Length: 219
Figure (tube, rainbow, N blue to C red):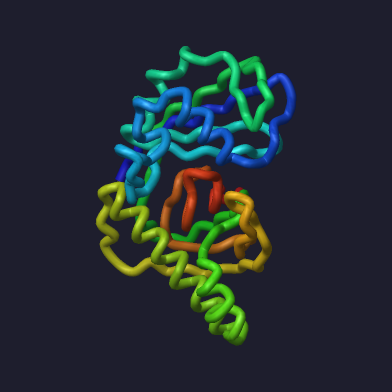
């Protein structure tokens, strides 16, 4: 299937910090009337794949809009000239915008993706009581199943029915991340899968806060 995407790159007057949740907080507070910006409705969390996702890559803020999220980003495009993050104000020197219709879904060949940001795959209980007690082959199988589950969940939320088996081969290593000041178990590395995922889409938990951002590796 085809997905409408809008990639918004905000060129700041200086590099910003590496916490995308602060960027999400700015847009959520400034434009609270748009539920897609913050995934809340009457203080209740909306459980669906985020159609607007936030990232900070190499000190540059990046916002991705998908389908209806594209329209929201277009509506607010001219309504801010600076961003305020964690008590600091950054002037936006340039807003780069890229609108595309991208292929999404099962593929007849494998593609390799890199996690540009840590993948938040397992909650602390599953990481400690399950993953760490497994042998390496069992760990790899758990991550494979989790990745496939993430892709299936994303597909369902985007209205795509996967017609046959998703085949995935992870090459990942564990690390430590942080969310809301709490340490969490994360993974970095690459994976191969017979599925087309547009660049900068997120997989796993807390993708709207910048976790699990993928990018296809060049051939």
